[in-house]
Image (cartoon, rainbow, N blue to C red; front, side, top):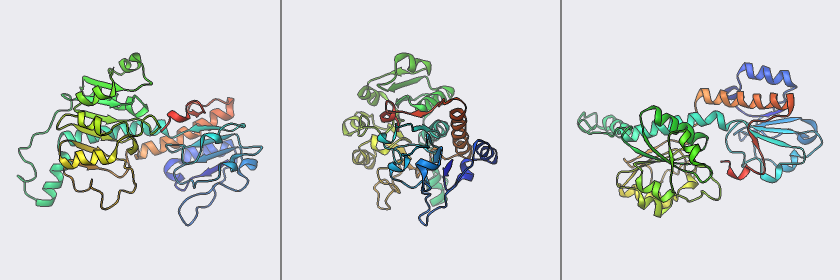
Amino acid sequence: MALNDLDGSRLYSAEEMNRLAALGEVIRPPATEAGTVPPPPGLGDDFDVLITSWSTAPFDPGLLRGGRLRLAVHSAGSVRRLFPIDALGDGLRLAQGGSDAMAEAVAEMALTMTLSVLRNVTLHDRRLQSTRDWRVGGNGMLGQSLAAQRVGVVSLSRVGRHYVRMLRGLGVTDVQVHDPYATEADAAEFGAELCELDDLCARSDVLALHAPSIPETVGMIGAKQLALLRDGAIIINTARAEITDEQALIAELVSGRISAALDVFTTEPLPTNSALLGLENVLLTPHVAGGTVQARFAQGRASVDEIERFVRDGALLAEVTPQNYHRLS
């Protein structure tokens, strides 16, 4: 099998590497000067399994065709950068080994951001660090209780479900969800109710975005939806920047009418002249929501689990198919 990953030691523990070795010979192609790992020559004909990650260099999907390769496991997030939908089929199966493992970590970051904005954590820190003045740092400034918030969640996705579960565990009782693929029973299982998008925006104190970037969701939080948010509302986005109309969001944030915590951006890295930088009502992180030590090793473990299942009886738990491809992030 071909392991196309530059930082395998961050994804695969010694135990997982031993599990892979027990399944067959593991080939790790060398990295390029650009810091990416290309697929090995003869991929389609000489290998049974391909394991990819963020450091895998984009390649011609035609390399997957051959008489031998039967499984590709992506141990990172979205498969779209490496595997177009027409790469599926002709005996090749694809599994998304990393998404479930990262979901809880992303939800933790979304919750952390929610609490940080509600309690003015970043604002207090910035002011106190920059002025060293207790009063300027916000002594006497009051935050908001999480349990008192009306929280709207866009998408009951893997991450969305973890986020709702965490909210409920911390005493939030008013949670509504917009998700055209979810049923009332799905929402009720997590103590939430389904809601139309515009109604969700109009009623939410906190609006958390957990939808994938697919044609139906691109720009779904536009100027109209942003205008429906009450003054002082908070947007949390650890999903995909394309879900929002970024320029309309920036306009609202520059006005100071609402606040936001953002981990994803239309252009990454975030340009140094971005209007988002320097705003007191905006918390920014550089696309790191899924980045915990435990989540990374869980991604590797989940990928090895998929390969073992496939070798044992052909079963896959996180298979990407032509039917679900367009609903995945």
